[in-house]
Length: 457
Image (cartoon, rainbow, N blue to C red; front, top):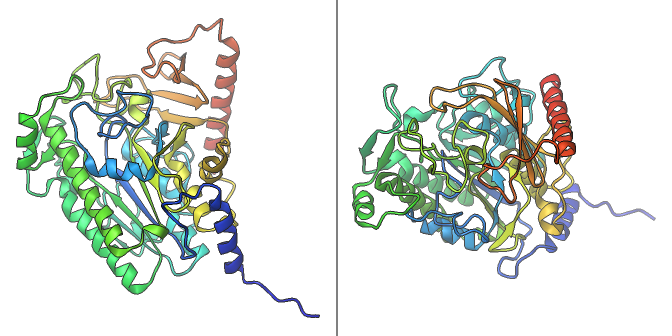
């Protein structure tokens, strides 16, 4: 008797339905349509830099001045990652990690403009290449700030804005970090959002599953904001932590752009097969002007900020919504930007096999069962080996695992260990004798991970 053959696509669909059923929310039913993916990437945004509490246990995990009603709307339907991280404390390395699912150290991209040797983009797997291997119908677009050295098309994008950097968003060669400008379309946020909305509409008309990444130029300095929102925040009572009306206005202008995207998703009726991921590429600048030394930075309650491996530089707002994910919930394990590619692959096709060189891991099964995220290493490596003119801090490396974080100062070869679960500000280094075992274990793990990433080419 002949056996009836089942197509690979059918197996994938059945497997995905079963995989997601454990976490399916009654408000969002899963369909068998290929899922769409939308990544909304903010620039230089503090973990506490929105009106969404990124940790429901902490009153200070949101701003006491800024208003982001559309992000609040997204959070009501999303999983919020209380320990969401960018792969780096500066923009370009994090953007590489998103595209390739790898740590900046492995990619030799640990600083802005640190582009030698060249990336082997023809052989490395990227998000667009991965999605089209799963389903050749996927159409992929990147609009906004790119800030990588190769054209987006080289990574498989069908459409893009090209080799954009901060300048396209209004940061000139002579601009300073404390400059302010009033514009009708600050940081091109509205234009960028409408561009994305038009793209989604075309994809629905063409009946194509899509990946859309909108990389916003906000909240990068110098600050540009709309006149009406500046006027609003000049009248509003200032917060104890956040008190700058121009940054507040730019933040809400960015949020308005997020609202345009959310409205278009609803209008097109694609919510039941569309995943939305919101995160920032690194934390906020420490102050406005960043050279000002303040005990309480724009990243409070975190310490430090952009250019810094302390929590303020790398812990960022991180939300994910979509079919099969429980709405308005919180996930407390560390996740980071290199996890996006493996997670998207898992959601698009749970049977897809990723290359062994991936540093990120899928968070899908971890969300379902609260299991640890499976990655190549037990912890996350943060590597910022350069002393920037703005940071005024020593170049450093850090290893984050479970409740602890080890920071290695590259200039004087000293180590500091913090229990970030209870000392979120990283102001109480743990005793080297009492925690000798943890110190030595983390040193070994950090050094092994660093050596392996630098050696695997």
